Image 1: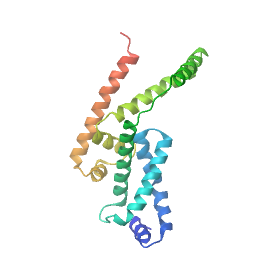
Image 2: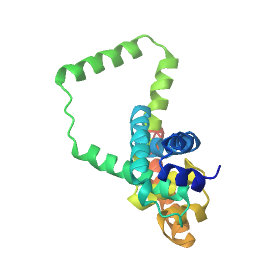
Image 3: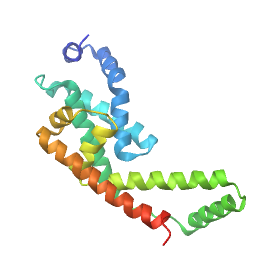
Image 4: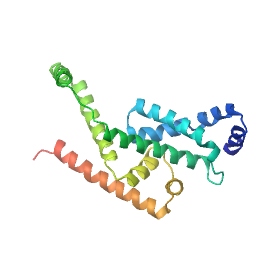
Length: 194
């Protein structure tokens, strides 16, 4: 059954069809969310929120647009709102927690386990990449996440973002350029010895 057929049945009161839509799109929405928040638990929560919002908004769904395009827009907006809220929330780390983290790190390196050290370096590198993606301007970040995490075409991204294909191409080029600059600085700072 097509998305539109399922939506028509849901609008007529057959709510059981909504599970089919969720099953069809849950992995896609999770990938979008993880592309923005980089934490599995947060991405899971956001995915659930997106499907709740979609269910509540289905009566307003304009069937002229593709359902997946509409769903992407809702997911992106939810992710951006989550990121904005997270930036406003201030999280204070107590001195005791910092001390405990420091002790654990010392123990890790004192064990002379090069595997643990390598894992720590890889995690630090991945964290920096995620931080660099989060630091992109909003439109560049959206285009980059949809392109790299969702592997959408520029045409699909243009539809979702309501932009021309040329504008999407430009956003992706700028995003790549910005990421390259940030990662080059990070590489030179951490790996190049002068």
